Amino acid sequence: MNIGKRIKEIRTQLLNDMSRKDFSAKLGIVENTVRNYELEASLPNSDVISKICNTFNIDPVWLLDGVGSMTKGDLVLPQNDDLIMIPMVEAVLSAGGGSFETNSTKEREYAFRKDFICRKGNPNDMVLMRVSGDSMEPDIQNNDVVLIDQSKTTILASKIYAVAFDDCVYIKRVEKDLNGIILISSNSNYSPIQITMNEQTENQFKIIGRVLWCGREFL
Image 1: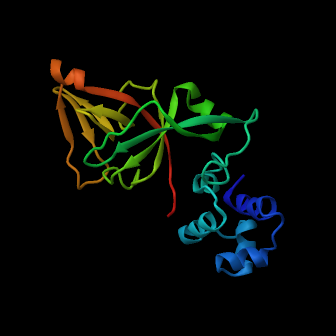
Image 2: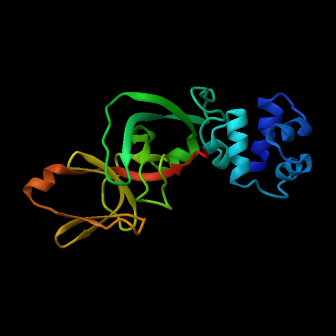
Image 3: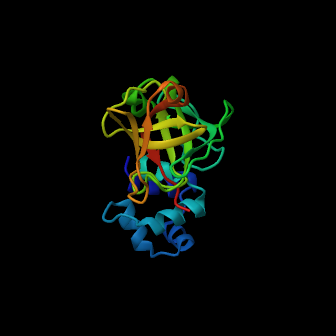
């Protein structure tokens, strides 16, 4: 299902066959524009996507990618054989100067398509966490949600990882060199972080898991 069909599903299923006229009026756009979206004659821009999500309480990840629940908050799609729930843990992953607020408590769980998740690995090893900071822009932006596979800790070139170092957790590209580990930001305003591996730093540094997916809210 693509974004045009998901817009139609919001109008016809969630909103009980609301007319295109009423639907477009609530968004402040022309009725024929909504028709074009649903027929895939055109695609909504970020402003329209934001209006749809804010007006009808729609989860932007679902609207853009068809992943998770249609509505935001604690209203999630019912579990069935086609869905699998991934926990959002209480955490802030730093993609900037560093912040660290995490424990084993789950905020909530989000529904993903089972075939999507199982293609990526074992769902029992996966968690969702929210990112803080701009050092990985444009790849990952402040307040994005990332899906992390905690079983994937082997460093592979060009991959993005959640890593813990010196009481901070970062989202970075991780590379090895002769001296140890380099944490690389996508944002050129941030210099690479060189970690010389020795007995002390080996106890401070840990790869939490590889980032498999990123979702974004339009505020």
